Length: 414
Image (cartoon, rainbow, N blue to C red; front, top):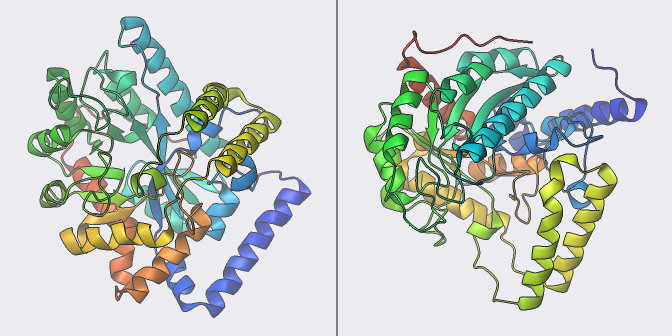
Protein backbone atom coordinates (compact mmCIF):
# COMPACT_ATOMS: atom_id res chain seq x y z
CA UNK A 1 0.00 0.00 0.00
CA UNK A 2 1.05 3.59 -0.57
CA UNK A 3 1.82 5.61 2.50
CA UNK A 4 -0.16 8.79 1.97
CA UNK A 5 -0.11 11.84 4.16
CA UNK A 6 -3.34 12.40 6.05
CA UNK A 7 -4.52 15.19 3.72
CA UNK A 8 -3.93 13.15 0.58
CA UNK A 9 -5.70 10.13 2.07
CA UNK A 10 -8.70 12.24 2.99
CA UNK A 11 -8.74 13.72 -0.51
CA UNK A 12 -8.83 10.29 -2.10
CA UNK A 13 -11.49 9.02 0.28
CA UNK A 14 -13.63 12.09 -0.27
CA UNK A 15 -13.24 11.83 -4.02
CA UNK A 16 -14.41 8.22 -4.02
CA UNK A 17 -17.42 8.86 -1.81
CA UNK A 18 -18.53 11.87 -3.82
CA UNK A 19 -18.23 9.85 -7.03
CA UNK A 20 -20.37 7.07 -5.56
CA UNK A 21 -23.05 9.52 -4.44
CA UNK A 22 -23.18 11.15 -7.87
CA UNK A 23 -23.57 7.78 -9.57
CA UNK A 24 -26.41 6.90 -7.21
CA UNK A 25 -28.50 9.94 -8.15
CA UNK A 26 -27.36 10.57 -11.74
CA UNK A 27 -28.29 7.89 -14.32
CA UNK A 28 -25.78 9.24 -16.86
CA UNK A 29 -23.02 9.12 -14.27
CA UNK A 30 -23.99 5.56 -13.37
CA UNK A 31 -23.61 4.56 -17.02
CA UNK A 32 -20.28 6.40 -17.24
CA UNK A 33 -18.96 4.40 -14.28
CA UNK A 34 -19.84 1.14 -16.06
CA UNK A 35 -17.79 1.99 -19.17
CA UNK A 36 -14.08 1.56 -19.77
CA UNK A 37 -13.04 5.21 -20.12
CA UNK A 38 -9.77 5.60 -21.98
CA UNK A 39 -7.97 8.78 -23.11
CA UNK A 40 -5.45 8.14 -25.90
CA UNK A 41 -3.14 11.08 -25.20
CA UNK A 42 -2.06 12.25 -21.75
CA UNK A 43 0.95 14.58 -21.75
CA UNK A 44 1.14 14.06 -17.98
CA UNK A 45 4.56 12.31 -18.05
CA UNK A 46 6.11 15.75 -18.57
CA UNK A 47 5.27 16.33 -14.89
CA UNK A 48 6.98 13.22 -13.57
CA UNK A 49 10.43 14.79 -13.26
CA UNK A 50 9.24 17.95 -11.52
CA UNK A 51 10.51 18.35 -7.94
CA UNK A 52 7.75 17.75 -5.42
CA UNK A 53 5.15 16.65 -7.99
CA UNK A 54 3.16 13.46 -7.41
CA UNK A 55 0.41 11.95 -9.51
CA UNK A 56 -1.19 10.81 -6.25
CA UNK A 57 -1.92 14.37 -5.14
CA UNK A 58 -4.84 16.39 -6.39
CA UNK A 59 -3.74 19.47 -8.31
CA UNK A 60 -5.70 22.54 -9.37
CA UNK A 61 -5.62 23.49 -13.04
CA UNK A 62 -6.00 27.20 -12.31
CA UNK A 63 -3.11 27.15 -9.85
CA UNK A 64 -0.76 24.41 -11.03
CA UNK A 65 -1.74 24.15 -14.68
CA UNK A 66 -2.08 20.36 -14.30
CA UNK A 67 -5.14 18.47 -15.58
CA UNK A 68 -4.51 14.78 -14.79
CA UNK A 69 -3.76 13.03 -11.51
CA UNK A 70 -5.02 9.97 -9.68
CA UNK A 71 -7.69 11.69 -7.55
CA UNK A 72 -9.15 13.34 -10.63
CA UNK A 73 -9.04 10.09 -12.59
CA UNK A 74 -11.26 8.63 -9.86
CA UNK A 75 -13.54 11.66 -9.84
CA UNK A 76 -13.84 11.70 -13.63
CA UNK A 77 -14.42 7.96 -13.93
CA UNK A 78 -11.27 7.59 -16.05
CA UNK A 79 -9.94 4.03 -16.12
CA UNK A 80 -6.66 4.74 -17.89
CA UNK A 81 -4.96 6.07 -20.94
CA UNK A 82 -1.91 6.36 -23.13
CA UNK A 83 0.79 8.30 -21.27
CA UNK A 84 2.87 10.04 -23.91
CA UNK A 85 6.63 10.22 -24.25
CA UNK A 86 6.64 13.66 -25.89
CA UNK A 87 10.03 14.73 -27.25
CA UNK A 88 10.32 18.33 -28.52
CA UNK A 89 11.76 18.74 -31.99
CA UNK A 90 15.43 19.71 -32.07
CA UNK A 91 18.55 19.64 -34.24
CA UNK A 92 18.45 16.98 -36.94
CA UNK A 93 22.05 16.01 -36.32
CA UNK A 94 23.74 12.91 -34.89
CA UNK A 95 24.15 14.74 -31.57
CA UNK A 96 20.53 15.84 -31.62
CA UNK A 97 19.36 12.29 -32.35
CA UNK A 98 21.39 10.94 -29.42
CA UNK A 99 19.99 13.57 -27.06
CA UNK A 100 16.45 12.80 -28.22
CA UNK A 101 17.04 9.06 -27.77
CA UNK A 102 18.26 9.57 -24.22
CA UNK A 103 15.39 11.94 -23.41
CA UNK A 104 12.83 9.44 -24.68
CA UNK A 105 14.33 6.53 -22.75
CA UNK A 106 14.45 8.59 -19.56
CA UNK A 107 10.78 9.55 -19.92
CA UNK A 108 9.80 5.92 -20.52
CA UNK A 109 11.64 4.92 -17.35
CA UNK A 110 9.87 7.67 -15.40
CA UNK A 111 6.48 6.34 -16.49
CA UNK A 112 7.41 2.80 -15.47
CA UNK A 113 8.74 4.06 -12.15
CA UNK A 114 5.47 5.89 -11.51
CA UNK A 115 3.51 2.69 -12.08
CA UNK A 116 5.87 0.61 -9.94
CA UNK A 117 5.82 3.11 -7.08
CA UNK A 118 2.03 3.22 -7.03
CA UNK A 119 1.28 -0.34 -8.10
CA UNK A 120 -1.70 -0.56 -5.75
CA UNK A 121 -3.62 1.89 -7.94
CA UNK A 122 -1.83 1.80 -11.33
CA UNK A 123 -1.02 -1.09 -13.65
CA UNK A 124 1.18 -1.12 -16.74
CA UNK A 125 -0.78 -2.22 -19.82
CA UNK A 126 0.81 -3.80 -22.85
CA UNK A 127 -2.36 -5.00 -24.54
CA UNK A 128 -6.15 -4.79 -24.32
CA UNK A 129 -6.34 -7.75 -21.94
CA UNK A 130 -4.02 -5.98 -19.49
CA UNK A 131 -6.40 -3.02 -19.47
CA UNK A 132 -9.33 -5.31 -18.71
CA UNK A 133 -7.42 -6.97 -15.87
CA UNK A 134 -6.56 -3.59 -14.39
CA UNK A 135 -10.19 -2.50 -14.44
CA UNK A 136 -11.25 -5.76 -12.80
CA UNK A 137 -8.65 -5.15 -10.07
CA UNK A 138 -9.93 -1.57 -9.58
CA UNK A 139 -6.65 -0.10 -10.84
CA UNK A 140 -5.96 2.55 -13.47
CA UNK A 141 -4.16 1.16 -16.51
CA UNK A 142 -1.18 2.93 -18.06
CA UNK A 143 -0.33 2.43 -21.73
CA UNK A 144 2.79 4.11 -23.11
CA UNK A 145 2.93 6.04 -26.39
CA UNK A 146 5.41 8.24 -28.23
CA UNK A 147 4.66 11.69 -29.60
CA UNK A 148 7.33 12.46 -32.22
CA UNK A 149 9.68 9.93 -33.78
CA UNK A 150 12.69 12.12 -33.04
CA UNK A 151 14.10 9.66 -30.43
CA UNK A 152 14.36 6.87 -33.02
CA UNK A 153 14.78 8.74 -36.30
CA UNK A 154 18.55 8.25 -36.24
CA UNK A 155 18.31 4.49 -35.77
CA UNK A 156 15.09 2.63 -36.44
CA UNK A 157 16.22 -0.35 -34.35
CA UNK A 158 15.46 1.92 -31.39
CA UNK A 159 11.78 1.35 -32.19
CA UNK A 160 12.30 -2.15 -30.83
CA UNK A 161 14.02 -0.69 -27.77
CA UNK A 162 11.03 1.51 -27.01
CA UNK A 163 8.66 -1.38 -27.70
CA UNK A 164 10.68 -3.34 -25.15
CA UNK A 165 10.13 -0.57 -22.62
CA UNK A 166 6.38 -0.94 -23.14
CA UNK A 167 5.49 1.54 -25.90
CA UNK A 168 2.46 0.39 -27.91
CA UNK A 169 1.65 3.52 -29.97
CA UNK A 170 4.01 5.79 -31.92
CA UNK A 171 3.58 9.08 -33.75
CA UNK A 172 6.27 9.80 -36.32
CA UNK A 173 6.33 13.60 -36.23
CA UNK A 174 5.28 16.65 -34.22
CA UNK A 175 5.14 20.41 -34.95
CA UNK A 176 8.26 20.38 -37.15
CA UNK A 177 9.35 18.09 -39.97
CA UNK A 178 11.92 15.47 -39.06
CA UNK A 179 13.91 12.80 -40.87
CA UNK A 180 10.85 10.54 -41.00
CA UNK A 181 7.94 12.68 -42.14
CA UNK A 182 6.36 16.06 -42.78
CA UNK A 183 4.42 17.82 -40.06
CA UNK A 184 0.92 19.26 -40.51
CA UNK A 185 2.31 22.58 -39.24
CA UNK A 186 5.49 22.88 -41.31
CA UNK A 187 6.27 23.47 -44.98
CA UNK A 188 6.40 20.29 -47.12
CA UNK A 189 9.84 18.72 -47.25
CA UNK A 190 9.32 15.06 -48.06
CA UNK A 191 5.79 15.49 -49.42
CA UNK A 192 4.75 12.80 -47.00
CA UNK A 193 7.04 10.13 -45.60
CA UNK A 194 10.77 10.04 -46.16
CA UNK A 195 12.30 6.72 -47.29
CA UNK A 196 13.28 6.13 -43.66
CA UNK A 197 9.74 7.03 -42.61
CA UNK A 198 8.35 4.34 -44.89
CA UNK A 199 10.71 1.85 -43.23
CA UNK A 200 9.43 3.06 -39.84
CA UNK A 201 5.87 2.21 -40.87
CA UNK A 202 6.94 -1.31 -41.77
CA UNK A 203 8.86 -1.67 -38.51
CA UNK A 204 5.87 -0.48 -36.46
CA UNK A 205 3.68 -3.08 -38.16
CA UNK A 206 6.18 -5.84 -37.42
CA UNK A 207 6.36 -4.73 -33.77
CA UNK A 208 2.60 -4.55 -33.38
CA UNK A 209 2.79 -0.84 -32.61
CA UNK A 210 -0.21 1.37 -33.48
CA UNK A 211 0.78 4.19 -35.85
CA UNK A 212 -0.47 7.60 -34.73
CA UNK A 213 -0.89 10.23 -37.48
CA UNK A 214 -1.93 13.17 -35.32
CA UNK A 215 0.46 16.07 -36.09
CA UNK A 216 1.35 14.47 -39.44
CA UNK A 217 0.67 16.18 -42.75
CA UNK A 218 -2.22 15.11 -44.96
CA UNK A 219 0.23 13.40 -47.31
CA UNK A 220 1.75 11.45 -44.43
CA UNK A 221 -1.69 10.30 -43.25
CA UNK A 222 -2.59 9.06 -46.71
CA UNK A 223 0.74 7.30 -47.24
CA UNK A 224 0.65 5.62 -43.83
CA UNK A 225 -2.91 4.47 -44.50
CA UNK A 226 -1.74 2.97 -47.78
CA UNK A 227 1.43 1.33 -46.45
CA UNK A 228 0.33 0.10 -43.04
CA UNK A 229 -0.94 -3.46 -42.76
CA UNK A 230 -2.74 -2.51 -39.53
CA UNK A 231 -5.38 0.09 -38.65
CA UNK A 232 -4.05 3.52 -37.72
CA UNK A 233 -5.14 6.17 -35.24
CA UNK A 234 -5.35 9.92 -34.82
CA UNK A 235 -4.72 10.01 -31.07
CA UNK A 236 -5.74 13.66 -30.57
CA UNK A 237 -7.16 15.61 -33.50
CA UNK A 238 -10.26 17.58 -34.52
CA UNK A 239 -12.45 17.79 -37.60
CA UNK A 240 -11.47 20.28 -40.31
CA UNK A 241 -15.03 20.53 -41.61
CA UNK A 242 -16.05 21.96 -38.22
CA UNK A 243 -13.03 24.26 -37.90
CA UNK A 244 -10.40 24.76 -40.58
CA UNK A 245 -7.01 24.12 -39.01
CA UNK A 246 -4.14 22.02 -40.39
CA UNK A 247 -4.05 19.99 -37.17
CA UNK A 248 -7.61 18.84 -37.84
CA UNK A 249 -8.44 16.04 -40.26
CA UNK A 250 -10.46 16.50 -43.43
CA UNK A 251 -13.64 14.50 -43.99
CA UNK A 252 -12.05 12.57 -46.85
CA UNK A 253 -9.02 11.62 -44.78
CA UNK A 254 -11.20 10.70 -41.80
CA UNK A 255 -13.08 8.33 -44.08
CA UNK A 256 -9.75 6.90 -45.22
CA UNK A 257 -8.72 6.21 -41.61
CA UNK A 258 -12.08 4.58 -40.92
CA UNK A 259 -11.91 2.48 -44.09
CA UNK A 260 -8.57 1.20 -42.80
CA UNK A 261 -10.33 0.15 -39.60
CA UNK A 262 -8.80 3.00 -37.63
CA UNK A 263 -10.06 5.60 -35.17
CA UNK A 264 -10.18 9.41 -34.94
CA UNK A 265 -9.80 10.49 -31.31
CA UNK A 266 -11.35 13.94 -30.95
CA UNK A 267 -9.36 16.35 -28.80
CA UNK A 268 -10.31 19.40 -26.75
CA UNK A 269 -7.62 21.85 -27.85
CA UNK A 270 -9.07 25.34 -28.01
CA UNK A 271 -6.59 26.61 -30.59
CA UNK A 272 -7.84 24.05 -33.10
CA UNK A 273 -11.49 24.99 -32.55
CA UNK A 274 -11.51 28.79 -32.75
CA UNK A 275 -9.71 31.29 -34.98
CA UNK A 276 -6.37 32.62 -33.80
CA UNK A 277 -6.57 36.11 -32.26
CA UNK A 278 -5.68 39.17 -34.28
CA UNK A 279 -2.00 40.03 -34.25
CA UNK A 280 -0.82 41.94 -31.18
CA UNK A 281 2.84 42.83 -30.81
CA UNK A 282 2.45 43.39 -27.07
CA UNK A 283 0.70 40.07 -26.45
CA UNK A 284 3.12 38.16 -28.67
CA UNK A 285 6.10 39.67 -26.84
CA UNK A 286 4.60 38.80 -23.46
CA UNK A 287 3.85 35.22 -24.51
CA UNK A 288 7.30 34.78 -26.04
CA UNK A 289 8.89 35.88 -22.80
CA UNK A 290 6.58 33.59 -20.84
CA UNK A 291 7.39 30.57 -22.99
CA UNK A 292 11.08 30.81 -22.16
CA UNK A 293 10.06 29.83 -18.64
CA UNK A 294 8.56 26.58 -19.90
CA UNK A 295 11.95 25.51 -21.24
CA UNK A 296 12.83 24.32 -17.73
CA UNK A 297 9.39 22.88 -16.98
CA UNK A 298 10.88 19.47 -16.13
CA UNK A 299 12.91 20.88 -13.24
CA UNK A 300 10.54 23.54 -11.89
CA UNK A 301 9.63 23.50 -8.24
CA UNK A 302 5.96 23.73 -7.27
CA UNK A 303 6.44 27.40 -6.37
CA UNK A 304 8.12 28.20 -9.68
CA UNK A 305 5.42 26.41 -11.62
CA UNK A 306 2.64 28.26 -9.85
CA UNK A 307 4.35 31.60 -10.45
CA UNK A 308 4.57 30.79 -14.16
CA UNK A 309 0.88 29.84 -14.33
CA UNK A 310 -0.04 33.06 -12.52
CA UNK A 311 1.93 35.08 -15.08
CA UNK A 312 0.15 33.27 -17.90
CA UNK A 313 -3.24 34.06 -16.35
CA UNK A 314 -2.27 37.72 -16.03
CA UNK A 315 -1.31 37.88 -19.72
CA UNK A 316 -4.59 36.20 -20.67
CA UNK A 317 -6.54 38.74 -18.64
CA UNK A 318 -4.63 41.64 -20.15
CA UNK A 319 -4.99 40.29 -23.70
CA UNK A 320 -8.17 38.16 -23.67
CA UNK A 321 -8.79 35.78 -26.56
CA UNK A 322 -11.80 33.71 -27.52
CA UNK A 323 -11.73 30.24 -25.98
CA UNK A 324 -13.49 27.20 -27.36
CA UNK A 325 -16.40 25.69 -25.44
CA UNK A 326 -17.76 22.28 -24.54
CA UNK A 327 -20.42 22.66 -27.25
CA UNK A 328 -17.68 23.23 -29.84
CA UNK A 329 -15.93 20.08 -28.70
CA UNK A 330 -19.19 18.16 -29.00
CA UNK A 331 -19.70 19.57 -32.51
CA UNK A 332 -16.40 17.95 -33.57
CA UNK A 333 -17.28 14.68 -31.83
CA UNK A 334 -20.79 14.41 -33.24
CA UNK A 335 -19.64 15.36 -36.74
CA UNK A 336 -17.02 12.62 -36.66
CA UNK A 337 -19.52 10.01 -35.46
CA UNK A 338 -22.04 10.92 -38.14
CA UNK A 339 -19.34 10.98 -40.81
CA UNK A 340 -17.47 7.72 -40.19
CA UNK A 341 -19.68 5.81 -37.75
CA UNK A 342 -19.59 4.99 -34.07
CA UNK A 343 -16.91 2.30 -34.55
CA UNK A 344 -14.25 4.78 -35.66
CA UNK A 345 -14.36 7.65 -33.17
CA UNK A 346 -12.85 8.18 -29.72
CA UNK A 347 -11.80 10.93 -27.31
CA UNK A 348 -8.67 12.60 -25.99
CA UNK A 349 -8.58 15.94 -24.23
CA UNK A 350 -4.86 16.49 -24.99
CA UNK A 351 -4.66 17.26 -21.28
CA UNK A 352 -1.39 18.45 -19.75
CA UNK A 353 -0.36 19.27 -23.32
CA UNK A 354 -2.35 22.44 -23.94
CA UNK A 355 -5.82 20.92 -24.13
CA UNK A 356 -8.91 22.16 -22.38
CA UNK A 357 -11.95 24.24 -23.34
CA UNK A 358 -14.57 26.04 -21.28
CA UNK A 359 -16.65 23.32 -19.66
CA UNK A 360 -14.07 20.59 -20.33
CA UNK A 361 -10.93 21.78 -18.64
CA UNK A 362 -9.68 18.57 -17.06
CA UNK A 363 -10.59 14.89 -16.79
CA UNK A 364 -13.17 15.45 -14.04
CA UNK A 365 -15.52 16.80 -16.75
CA UNK A 366 -15.55 13.56 -18.75
CA UNK A 367 -18.92 12.38 -17.37
CA UNK A 368 -20.42 15.42 -19.15
CA UNK A 369 -19.41 13.86 -22.48
CA UNK A 370 -21.23 10.63 -21.63
CA UNK A 371 -24.33 12.62 -20.64
CA UNK A 372 -24.18 14.64 -23.89
CA UNK A 373 -23.87 11.49 -26.01
CA UNK A 374 -26.81 9.91 -24.20
CA UNK A 375 -28.82 13.08 -24.84
CA UNK A 376 -27.86 12.86 -28.52
CA UNK A 377 -29.46 9.42 -28.68
CA UNK A 378 -26.47 7.09 -28.45
CA UNK A 379 -26.74 3.90 -26.41
CA UNK A 380 -24.40 2.94 -23.56
CA UNK A 381 -22.88 0.30 -25.84
CA UNK A 382 -22.19 2.92 -28.49
CA UNK A 383 -20.67 5.28 -25.95
CA UNK A 384 -18.50 2.45 -24.65
CA UNK A 385 -16.98 2.13 -28.11
CA UNK A 386 -16.18 5.84 -28.17
CA UNK A 387 -14.69 5.89 -24.68
CA UNK A 388 -12.34 2.96 -25.10
CA UNK A 389 -13.63 0.06 -27.12
CA UNK A 390 -12.57 1.40 -30.50
CA UNK A 391 -9.02 2.31 -29.49
CA UNK A 392 -8.52 -1.03 -27.75
CA UNK A 393 -9.80 -2.84 -30.85
CA UNK A 394 -7.23 -1.03 -33.01
CA UNK A 395 -4.47 -1.96 -30.57
CA UNK A 396 -5.57 -5.59 -30.57
CA UNK A 397 -5.68 -5.69 -34.38
CA UNK A 398 -2.23 -4.11 -34.73
CA UNK A 399 -0.72 -6.53 -32.24
CA UNK A 400 -2.34 -9.53 -33.93
CA UNK A 401 -0.37 -8.73 -37.10
CA UNK A 402 3.00 -8.42 -35.35
CA UNK A 403 5.98 -10.66 -36.02
CA UNK A 404 6.30 -12.66 -32.77
CA UNK A 405 10.01 -13.17 -33.40
CA UNK A 406 10.65 -9.42 -33.53
CA UNK A 407 8.45 -8.29 -30.64
CA UNK A 408 10.62 -8.04 -27.50
CA UNK A 409 9.52 -9.52 -24.21
CA UNK A 410 8.54 -6.66 -21.94
CA UNK A 411 9.22 -7.06 -18.22
CA UNK A 412 6.23 -6.29 -16.01
CA UNK A 413 6.93 -4.58 -12.69
CA UNK A 414 3.43 -4.65 -11.23
